[in-house]
Length: 177
Figure 1 (cartoon, rainbow, N blue to C red):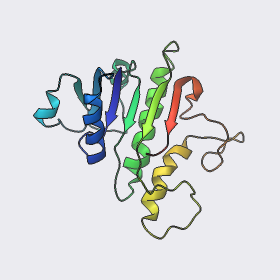
Figure 2 (figure 1 turned 180 degrees about the vertical axis):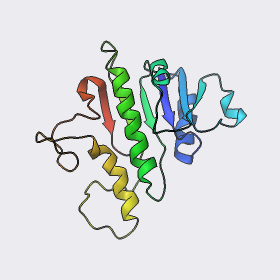
Figure 3 (figure 1 turned 90 degrees about the horizontal axis):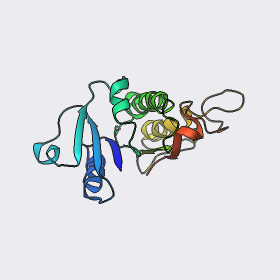
C-alpha cells in the first residue's frame, strides 16, 4: 500500500512518517516536502520525497503519478492559525486530487486524514478563551468544502460533497486526531 504524507519534517508528521515506514503493510511512503529531508531518513528504501515549492499549486503530473496511493495523511499546519497553511493548502490539494481521481473511476476511494490538533473547535460560533483563531481555522477546513442543499458553504452540514469529489472519490474524512 502506498501512503502520501505532508508535514514529514514536523513533530507530528515526523512521527507519522516513522510509523508508516515501520508498518509492514505500507510498501511506499511519498512525503511531499518543501526541502529534502535529512539523509538518514531520505535514504530509507520505502520513502520517496517529492519537493513541492508551493502547496497552493499541485502539479497534475505529480498527482497523477501518485493517484494509486491509498490515501493522504495531512500533518502540515501552523501553531498560531495560518489561513494559508491550515485551510488553503489542504483545500488546494483536495481540489486538485479530486480532479485527478475523477479520471480513475475504477480505483478504491481515496482516504484523507487531516491531523489538526488537540484543541480544535468544531463549534465556530462559540467564544473561546485561548487560541481562538487557530482552534477554529483548523475546523473550518472540514466545513469549507461542504455545501447544503441550498448551496451555502460552511456551517450548514448538508451533504458530503468535499471539494466536489463526492462519496465515490473520498473514502473517509477524519476530521482531527
